[in-house]
Image 1 (tube, rainbow over the protein chains, first blue to last red):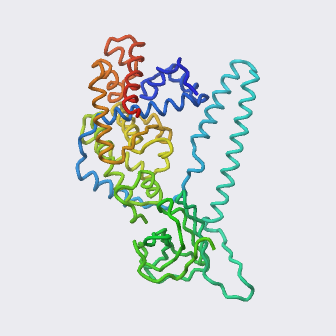
Image 2: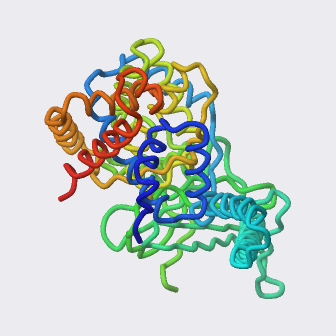
Image 3: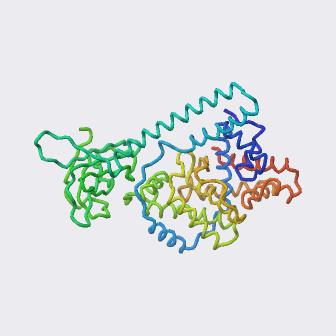
Length: 256
Length: 181
């Protein structure tokens, strides 16, 4: 796949933000429908990053670090579900391409090829939208406050604490769902651990159950590629600890 | 929880930890790239106070919206350098941000996460710029660090518009070539 030579120089200027007016509009319209030129634009932006390196040298004052850390400490953050699976860029591509195609189709009066392309784009956009809706529903069923988590056990058996870990080793992705968890003492939390086949337990998220004993841990920051022998839960100080300080109250062997 | 993050953790892990709210990961990214961000901001604005403000703004954006960085499409250092330059140009031109940071995708191969790799890349860039014709280097710097458009550069230098375009592109390609293995 090669770039369109007639746009090569303007692409370089566009990467630098040095293109204005009609030329800028023209290249943006072209980019909306040309993957090769979009790829070249990314590469050219990488080239400008090399240029940025030529300025390197001065160090920021120490107070800047303190200022930043104080600012982020003030902005507490909830755990966010990674959005890798659905990035906006492809959708924007489709929207941009559809808009560009609509303009061209208008100008060329019923160009049948473009009409077909637009139709394909709309279909693709609709397909992605449906996929996103499905993904959202799945995530909401785990995480929404009103979501009911029901554990089925043998009839007449008293409810037991249960946890289920879904672990994708190669992606470092982990989803953990718990139910019937007992209430915790003050200033304590449950901590989930990956017990690797070799080495020390790896912390995999701190959680507190809701009023019904349910809890979820979604994609805690864990290393990728760790082969898990088992998963365990301990009761720890609510800020979490690096290594377990108490005996596990729940254990699950991987693969069972 | 991110206490298992090592000082040499790859960028992609640090960003994943930031998404989960790890302040420790944020501190590590700051220690790794604050010099690049600050240097670019200082070079563009020429004002230490403004550069400090931009440094804060860029890292707060990463903290608030780490998903804007797509690790599949390039290095974190390169992305931070480019969005810093864009914001700095916006600030000296006193205009609203022209590009959303989520729309900035930067493909760049060299790993800039390590101090040694970054220092080596810096030397290579400076060597390439030193070997470039002074006029060509000047055109690149006017476009990148001063944020001038091609028409403004042509007016300022007296060079024909076509020459400005050709030299800027070939200058960028020379930089790229320096990093081809």
